[in-house]
Image (cartoon, rainbow, N blue to C red):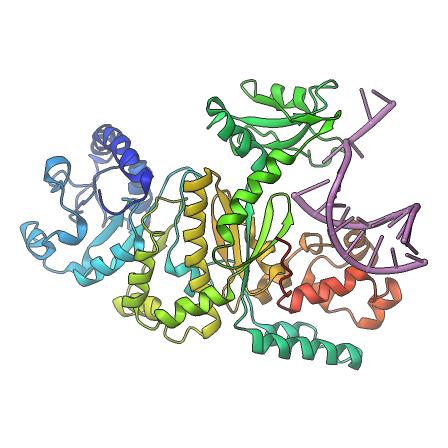
Length: 499
DNA sequence: GACTCGGTCACT
DNA sequence: TAGTGACCG
């Protein structure tokens, strides 16, 4: 069933079963619509397709209709999309212009592979849909890397970012320092770090230990005696029920009893105890397992019990040398070889623009600069690593891929669980400009609050508009936090291996 | 009675 | 240098 990951076969079988009933309901539901255009269907499953058909109906009002006269390439008649003689099949349906066909992919296959095949067959209107629950699998495709606007609010363009603080009042000394950092960054633009963060490793570890907990809402608690114990980790299944470690606007944390009330079926796992205290060694060693895998691709720096930074600069450069990303062919080859694209994914929607040329342009992007290409390689490597981690440890993890640790960390949790987020060139400005100060590492506490309350700043953009004198007057720029802020923001945050 | 508590960093 | 506080997860 195509080149999917280990989940594909299983999910496809499930999807097929659901497909039969789904088709039934589609015909009933859309049967009274007037047919103005033939909708050719290639699919071997129809998971939640009805929703999408309805959506399409709204988008392409009157032009997209489910048609009884479908050719089903399904079951024993299955032919892979890329192997179908589309010219002949279209003619059989009286369609002469393939550019007027809308292709709808819901097959959880490599989007790049499909895009290439579709373009080759003359199709120009393509929608990719994917609808598995997040966290079950992962997915990655080029637009993530090459389309700066695709990932909202993330960008990396140091000179432009500096423009944010164009106030001439910045102390010349500080300015010089900043410039030197930027200069440094310019040369090291080749440097790339990324952060991978193990998601809720405590519950994941417990779920791996006890198969009965897998897929079940689970929390790890300590000090079971009072109100069910304090929550130290919450699985994503449990989060779906509204269980969380901290309850917003209420000073107390959620405890075991409260979790049980919100989610009666929840599993409370007692954290291991040694000498009367919580012993997290089990979870630490789980992290070590992951780091051991990541370390094969670059220097690792453990940031916390469940987070690690990985410097992929060399690995990315090497990949780029071996397979320059100038041609889509190379990208396709590498991407396919990397075995990341075939994995079913969290919901990703992409649509080629009306003109086929734009579509191809999106792919080629030969103007994409070297840094972005490195990021692209980094993203591919990370996807590979995450697959490997999943296979070898059963843990899923999220990752941020960026040119410095601060940005990587910042976005690593933007899409989760089990997803990765790339910080392409040209979006950092928007991100930082709109980033609430408290989201910035080290500004999550009192200092961040003071900045908001005293100076009225809401975003990093606001903050950067303040002069050095003002900030110094209020807080003193020489505090460690402040120095770290600048360093992490502007520099590559040189890796310090602690493994 | 109870908002986890231990690691890390910066400062003194 | 040991002690303290902020921050984090």
